[in-house]
Image (cartoon, rainbow, N blue to C red; front, side, top):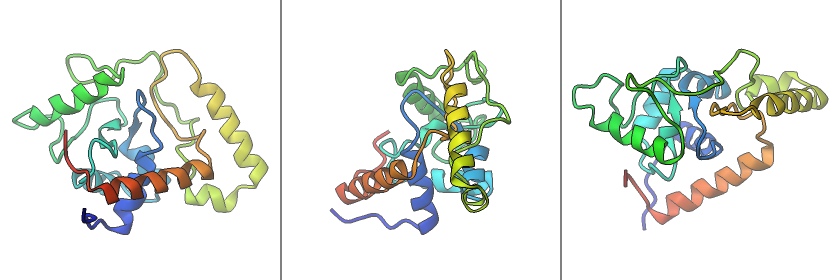
Length: 178
């Protein structure tokens, strides 16, 4: 099958999406900080994800815990159909929302989390400092009911593996089977 053309930016975003395990979510803002861009740019890349749900854009929600957009529609879109699909996909993974579309969790994201590994962190931190931050975040993220994924436990090898998985998904020609 032919590979769908995506931009380098989309490839970076989709690779990072593959790091988010089932049953966990991240925010547009956290992903944007990771890639040194804006939440709107992340939303634009997710809106055009031809590999959903294999590349899990449904695992990205608004930073305030609301479900956010899906397939180009924001949370109060007139149809509501896309939100229903996103909520169904997340519920199948064990992530639940209340009737108003707010994430149900006993732990909310805090500013102490370091989302993924940012380019700025990678260039300004020593290896020992970055390792200490990752260990602290991993320990904090282990709490019961924690569904926010901040990527702090991700290693460079995880990113390499995600890049390989994205190539396989792209080559298989899978697209929008939501």
